Every structure is written in structure tokens, then in C-alpha cells.
Length: 119
Image (cartoon, rainbow, N blue to C red; front, side):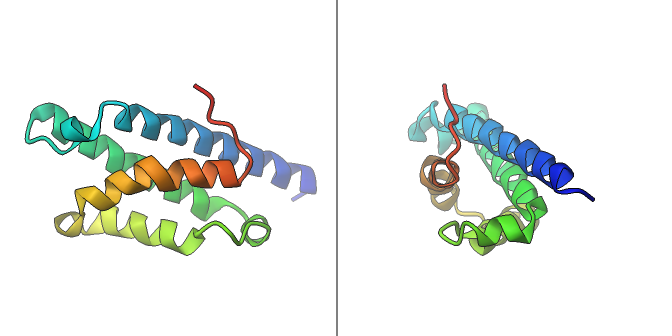
């Protein structure tokens, strides 16, 4: 596999992360009160938020180790652990932790990587 192929794959995955950051912003844009509400809308937002975190982690896991090594400031392992928690231990998912990841961690990771989620 050529370096160009690797670069194209990284670029594609980083574009995916930007998309997922926008999705996280959409979820949090509805506000925390609705997100945690015991309504169908709240349930949908929580499910969407959890899915965003799973998608972020799935893409992160596909990034080459060499790329991740260039960005040690990103908590790569914590991202994978969050995915495992959300995907496999639904009974232990804490809405506050997921909310914090959507509000803070996903956007911070994207900014740290020099990506622009735009509007």
C-alpha cells in the first residue's frame, strides 16, 4: 500500500470525524434539559449521542498507529473505552458522561487535530 493510499484513508477518516463532530453539535444543540428528559425526544437524542460516540471511536480505531503517535495529546485509549462502554454495557451508561463527551471531548479532539467542523 502506498503512502498516498494511506494519506487518502487518513483524510477520509478525518473527514468522518468532522461529520461526527457536527452530529454531536446537533445533538447538544437541543439542550441538556431535552437530552436528559424522560420523553421520546430525550430518548432519541440520547440514542443519537451514544451512536455518535460509537462512530467516532470506530473511525479512531481505524486511524493508523503512526498518525495517532503524532497526536499523543488525544486520549485515543479513552475514546475506545467509551465506545466499549456505550456499545456493550448499556446499563452502565451515564448520561452525564456521554453529554460531556459530546459537548467537550469530541469538539476538543477535532480542534486538537486541526480540523474545522464548521457550521
